Image: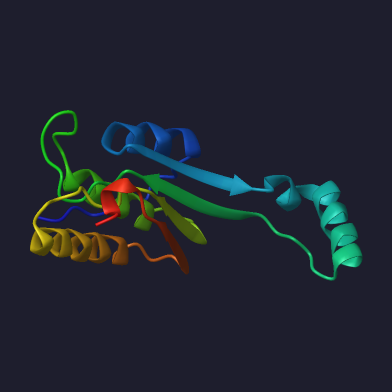
Length: 145
């Protein structure tokens, strides 16, 4: 059963509340929002463009940590489902982030080599649902094997 993503605007605080309940950490950041506001922002952007040859613009990015694909049980009874929900939430945003940064513990460790491979494939499949132009992955100690 699949659910339709919400089209309700989601601010950073709401995203943190939802992601924080289901993942180790999640955040949605807007960088340099003042550059998009009024004449002052336009003026600053123009001055920076003259000085550097390129005008900066605001951008949005998401950061998820400790997705632990493959883990189930206390303290996270949702396990992999939490990451799936976060992926659907991000993909359903009215304005999608330009980048997503995954910081550590993408999967949960396992002594079974085949299980580790399955968990990484599952991580890749879930992360692949998030339609953003750029994805960066930083492995953690659970990913070391």
